[in-house]
Image (cartoon, rainbow, N blue to C red):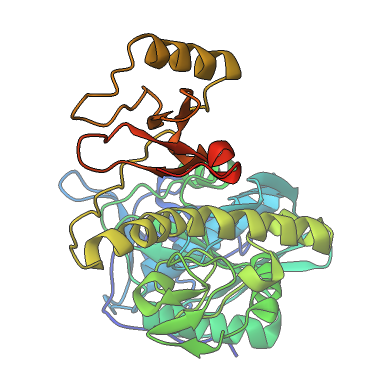
Length: 397
């Protein structure tokens, strides 16, 4: 039994059922008054066509009985006839969406399908009626939403019933029943252009939603968040607030159902190899971690300088270069200079430019270095002495 959702009183009626043929008739197609030969699609009571000059043309019960939803049900009946004549319907695109996704993913583009069969059934005083179209093995229920009649809770009940009975639901946004144009021509345009149609439940859409949900996993909690395959917080984890807005989190609640671990984000990712998916996730992870790594590297380089004690720089020792030793020619030249100007009576020591001290032997008269003298010096003879050679020969002062 179809779900009954009734919330308000009667309204204007624009379709009636021909008493002779059982075909729906629009108010514009019938004669005025009782000559319309029509009855109510819900209760079966006779109609009269009210086609005056002051109010919008409509049907009314002869008894003035206000049959609730008769106007809406009559439009359903008229739409059923449109489907039977057209034998096709324009379906809107089927999209996959999750709360965190910035854009919907199209599963199937808008397209036309051929109708094999139309089923219309309305139990007495029930609402909404059951209007279904069949295309191959697929079954599609059509629901008209007059003036935003259905709330979220109503749609939830309709969806639950559709899942039990295994069919999809296509809903049309309709104007207020007392203000809109519901002529056969207008209903035909509505069906063929598909602009007013939207999915309440698509079996194909549900298939893909379940496919994504099957691979989603809740990551292990870590610090103030979860371990994250794409390092959305810059390290190997994600803060709770980052998970809440991550497009790889397909949870409906304030938790994490992550699909990044499988490398899946789009429908076509299911066709890729595991290696391709892993490579994509690794690329995203590195991209997310790079800014943090740069900051950490810069901080590590700055830390020793910022926290080191401030000591004065040590004074570098002055390095003196060692002069190269004089050559034999240079030494001989220095000796010749000393010998030429040697003064035995000088009161100061006789020293050449290389620091060598020179003494004159009193015995042999030769001028020799102090290391070649056996004895030298004394009062009045600081530059005089006896050389080692003369001393060995027995000479003494």
